Amino acid sequence: MIQGLVEQYLVRYLGDYIDGLDKQNLSVSTLRGQIHLRGARLKQEAVELLNLPCKLIFGEIGDLRINVSWNLMGSRPVVVELHRLLLLLGPKPIPEWSEEEEKRRVQLHRQKKIDQTDLLSDLKAETSVGEQSQGRLARIGTRMVDNLEIHLHDLHVRFEDPFPAGGGPPFHIGVHLPTVQVQTANSDWVPTFVDRSREQVPELFKLLTLQHLSAYYEQPAWAAGAPVCSPALPEDCRARFEAGDALDALVRCGRISFLLPPVSGRLQFTQNLSVADAMAPRFRLNCDLEKIRVQITQVSYAGLCGMVALVSEYFAFQEVVRHRIDTYWRHRPQEVVRGGNALKWWHYFARCALVGAPV
Image: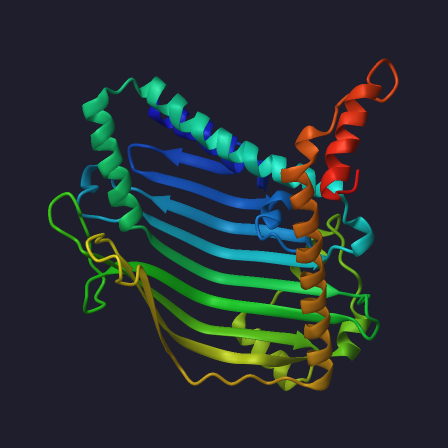
């Protein structure tokens, strides 16, 4: 029963972001505490979570495992392991921006919040737990979040703009992260298990360890000769991605140049859980990284400026549209003007005119 319930809600929630999610690529073993997702393609909705003017050309999850030790929830963390996440993005041209699209995005975001509330309500109803059990479930949920452990291997994101809006050669840029780990630690930054229900925990410590993070751009001569990728040709898209060792070889042959040469280090994040001292900072972040070198050429600088200009213009467009949505569109009549609805439209016109808003 529990296994079917978990599968049902995973398919329902993740299905909005993962294409073709079913029992063939999703395996749930409740007794062993394992959830396994393999060989899944991402949808455009997954990229929309970034809130950037990008469209998804190709996205793939190689292998995702979630390990939950049900019998040892009080002493072992929930472990999420993700192997090989590939994202190939392209710019969303300005002519494709529309107020209707932004309105759909806002409505979708609000619907997601409603769906999450419905999921929790349905889960409580189907498990038929009382108030005391619900309190126990809340403590277990807090314990799971506090001790969530994440292991990510081979994250590779590429952004390709074959025809920059400002002119110039094609601009291809990528970020590669071979390994990143997120663990709960003690005050000495040694990984540990935290249980707030058993002891007073004034601060929560999270340790993020990353290895060989790098960013690069493809030389214009190579970028211009590369065929434009299409979602219909996943093998061609997959061939765009190279592992870390191969990136070094591409640098030596002159195909790519590092914007950020590989760098490793640790990020130490501290959350203050005590509410007694209102003046104390709620969050603290300490970075312990290797020496960072940034290498920018005239070509890469022009491409980066074009990306920043596109994002800035998109944010300005979003601000205008969402102001209209929040302030005026909820008063806009749903009926057409004809058919005895003229008075509603005159009221709407007067409301907008008084505050100087476009109809």
